[in-house]
Image 1 (cartoon, helix red, strand yellow):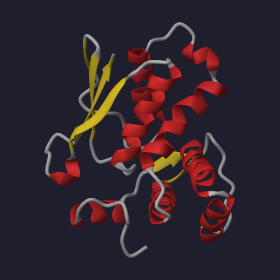
Image 2 (spheres, one colour):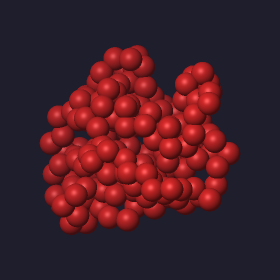
Image 3 (spheres, one colour):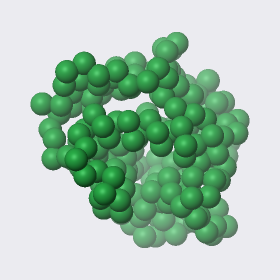
Image 4 (cartoon, helix red, strand yellow):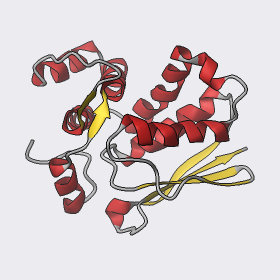
Length: 188
């Protein structure tokens, strides 16, 4: 890959092309599934063919470069990362309903932070989520996932709880923020 289509700046493009992290296969599969749902099975097959048809196991760690590649191909096909992200938490809830029993939206944000720490090699969100009444603020720093996917994941989380609210990126590392990308969730 000469450049990454969803990079927001030359610095972001360099970061993505040189990124050495690892991620569990379940997240590569999630983006592939999203590409297949939103872009059709031919797009998913094309992406898998370009990757030499790998078999991803959900609990096995893989190079984040493969994840970035899948995201790049989805972006080049014109797919919405917000929509792809929205599919992730509801699918996870369908697979693990017991983890959601008795939980709130804000509890689920803790699940998200835990996943960043345990499902990737690049660690958690920093600083940890901040909750103020019906509002939560999360920070992502040096993450290979498209910023819009983070928005979609959080919107999908709201849907898991039949909650309404807003999700917005209020600051972006790749647009100059020193503290990373800041995502704000406000629950109505």
